[in-house]
Length: 138
Image (cartoon, rainbow, N blue to C red; front, side, top):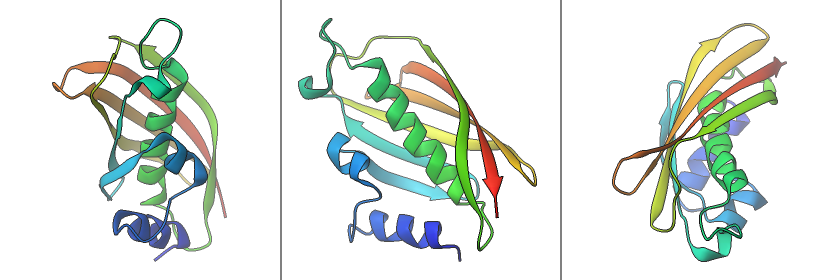
């Protein structure tokens, strides 16, 4: 079991934070494993932009956490990764409630991983579509 998987399991068990940003944003684990991950967070006013909706960067952050957890679930011992590129398409504004980020590894090669993530609101409506490319190092 790689060290990232151990950290994620401890986070899921409520024993630790995954990272300072997850605590700051209030991102919570739902599930992970086999190249998939689901996380959620409350889209409260403290995370709003000047328009009164969930800030787009925060929406990308929650997706990035989900994709990182999904990527970590397919790493071998001694491997790590870094995001090279992310792209987000915003589909619907979020004013409140919870958002859920559902990520999956699309392709895991020797040195590169491709991921995608659907972000949905608490009515299960699509609010963003995110893709990411990661460099795998080991």
